[in-house]
Image (cartoon, rainbow, N blue to C red; front, side, top):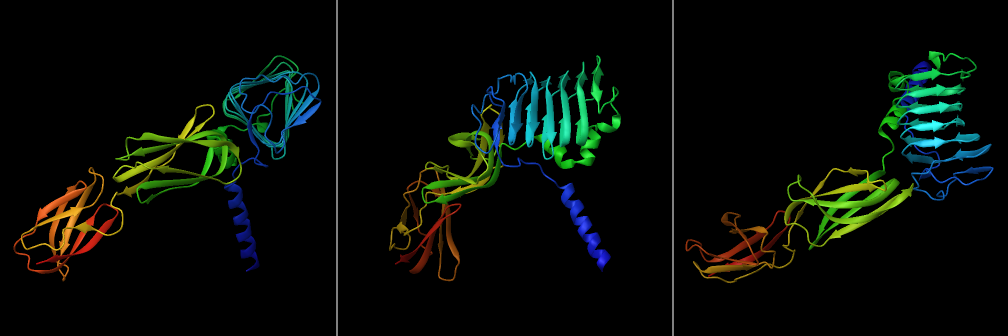
Length: 381
């Protein structure tokens, strides 16, 4: 029993490791920012200055130091020049090529992801327990110094060396054991592989709902986190295929807290319709979520108005005050539940003649839409 318990705990631990996911350690998210001249500076738990500046080429100057403590994204190529060091304690993602002539240290818990090529000439990269994933190729030439003290280093597109003076853990020849390829990345760390290839979701959507409330449709949604989220678009469709935009709602930009949003469609489509949510980043990239369906009717609950009483063979007029485009159904039942009338109509009122075969007595009238109905008693004389 003791060994079975230990085995169960071991399998549980291995399963947790296999399903590891990667997020910002302190939930700080921002774009690469315009560096200031200072001896040392860091991204902490507040929003960095000039967040959203995606075109700046950083120059640290001589022996300056920068520390990354949040999820920092560079949308485009990034050049890091000058002396000093860049220390990554959380996550730096470069959506482009990385050109570096200075030392980059990836500490325990830190991740450097380069979606393009990583070119380091006369610079250095040092994994101090951290992880590096280069989805393109890496070029380490002309005195580049690559040290893999601990941690993982994966290069999908291959490594190129050349020039003179480059060192790989002190050796002029890079031992292949220090670097993993795409197959190694996929098998050794599936969570990191997915994180590197798919990126962080611009938003983590918790819920999206649409309910009918009398003459309107109320939509609510919430997010657990947001990254560079500019705005949401509410889209609507009558068939679930072709959608139109009905509204936009401003997003929070960057957030690690649960946020709630809402929108009221005061002119909904009648019958069954579909709503979906589209999210757009500051850089124009977007993500569209699965649609949800609602059944809307202008047939508001309450008393049903119609001609009452009516003579055998007489005309019954039903007054609904609904939209003239909505299809409704009128049904008449006797006291035993037998259906005597079943007709479809549209418009604010509808008239039909009662059959002379219907005997005097009390009958039930029902007017229904796809999602609502009204009932009443009809007296036939």
